[in-house]
Length: 363
Image 1 (cartoon, one colour):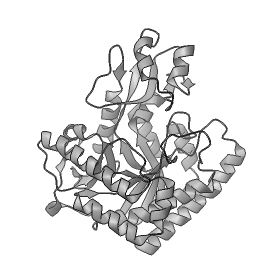
Image 2 (cartoon, rainbow, N blue to C red; image 1 turned 120 degrees about the horizontal axis):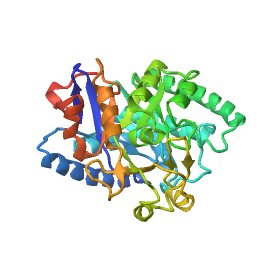
Image 3 (cartoon, one colour; image 1 turned 90 degrees about the horizontal axis):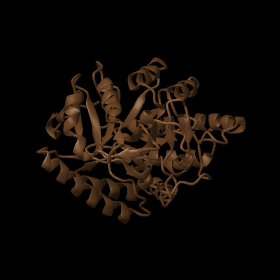
């Protein structure tokens, strides 16, 4: 789906859905069928009739490697998207494990494996882009986990990122279409808040590389969202893509411990942060040690659902961030990802109803 900013620019909107691994092309097509039906049902309830729906796919490394060398398979995938009224302008390269369960030994940006995966996604994306799109975007991790990130990893990362810029330049030269990569700051990663992003990007290629913001992660930094975005802007760092999301918040964690226990997921750690830069890798550990609150938990709360009392969601954080991005002379990002139920609310934040096919403009 495409929305129009007040400047006349188009902002590409994809609708959030749980990322699930697809090991082959038929599995991807099966997911597209389920996705298209689900999102169109929500849009119909909101009385929005659109000709195309944006989707950000996750293609695990093995499948991405296969598609990157098989032009016929990419053509088939593009045809399957067109047949369902779906368009792809972004791909997610944040997860890596084939089954979706991320362990500590997965490659970070000090590893050539992360580079190869990301360039495979870039080669795929240029063939999936709509005919009138001149560029797309990939989302990847915030360099790597902070724990264990030493000088050797830092030097290796610098070399790998140089090769990433060169690889993206080659894709653009060969295809005439550009792909940019957004690194997603997150609690516990080398890139977490605005200061770490500004420091890292002082030596990176900002024409092809930027940040991809998950607004639940931003909330967990405890930074003011406007100050965060202005710091990125002042450092010349492009905000390539924004995930509209709210984190879980507990003002008095000890009093809310009973409710919080229902959110513990041993298979998927959910970091906990506090205003004084406190960080706990997982909610279960935080409930055992009970560091002083308040807490923000890296658990996405559905945008139109309130968590059980006394917990709250960081709704005002994402609303403030999106409003600031969209109230500027030009949109502060080209790509938004949001739950389908949240589309109507975007009109209040600087975006008009969908741009239909006959009135699309090139961005």
